[in-house]
Image (cartoon, rainbow, N blue to C red):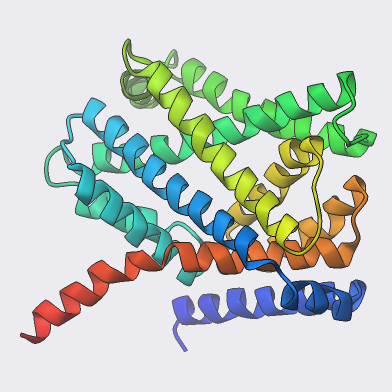
Length: 308
């Protein structure tokens, strides 16, 4: 067995193992009952929100790429984004689809700028999610948002927000260094400013990133509502981003297992049960998988063309 195949098998096994552990720690029968009785109307709402966030993300990528001298048509941007998402949801690591998107877009400006456009677009989305989470934590402390965050949760959120801010600070300071490292970091900062904060671009980046974050958070809330759980605003703004951030850890397939563990651990802070957290996370994962299925169309079309 090759190293890559062994790594893939290990990540799939870890995802399955984590879910088994979670099932043993919560009321698995209750979680299954919630899933079986899920309201399809709320699941459809989640499907629509996740489909919308894909289109909005594609538009954000198109804008970012344009600032880096890449012209990508609307239809192509949406098609490529769907394709990258379906690959991310199907293969271990969660980033292979984005790497492929950069490779296919390299023709106009080269692989470096194509990769940078993809990376900055994804980074903008994560920054927006961290901003919502930080603002939600402040609001939960100042006003009653249905969530009373314990100290460890507040510390975790603060650390993530500080880490996101720290990336920008390190990149900026790195540009001041002498030699090749300083030139490389300086070039990165210049390109990032051009792509994300240039006049006429900044507010579009902010609006699209906050909109995609809202779509993801509300989609999870809709999945929770489908199984009979109404999450308070504080939980949606603070806990759900942490649950979704768990998916970014590249040790399983599409975050399966990690997301369920985070949901089963965190959602009880909002008055739900671990079983409800597990059920809501599984529902979200399945709806998300269904929502990216249009990404299979380019693959099927290419195979059909190859067989002609």
